[in-house]
Image (cartoon, rainbow, N blue to C red; front, side, top):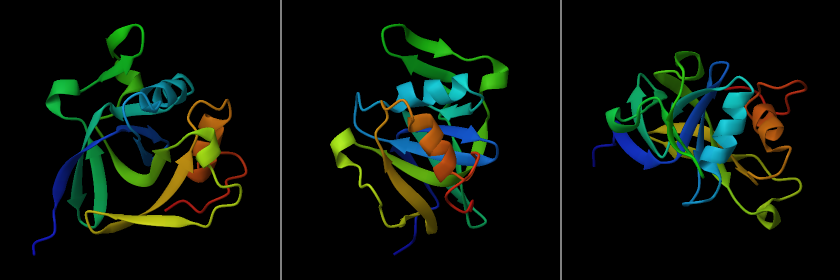
Length: 152
């Protein structure tokens, strides 16, 4: 069987520094809300709702489908086109984030890895509506003060 070199997934992708972060969860789980808070603090949007993933030379590259480029859904306001300094065309995926309710978070989880398009990536579970969610995400991506995980 031929391994996929490209796919489109349901999620939101932001980039912090040079780390692409794919945020996954069902409708209303808080993907865009968490992304908006991260963007407000300096992250850049790659794509909201649908994310195109490609394996390029052993790295997973995330980008936006043409239909949703540069836009994010803001609950209660609608689709918003972001300014150029708040977006980026693509990012090297460095972290997968699965959104869960507060009760679904392990206190001391073991490191998790998932293979995407033939590339192993670290994966964490996160409760998106906790005030500390953006800080936890930055730490997990190795982009925060006192980072707790090695950046890929």
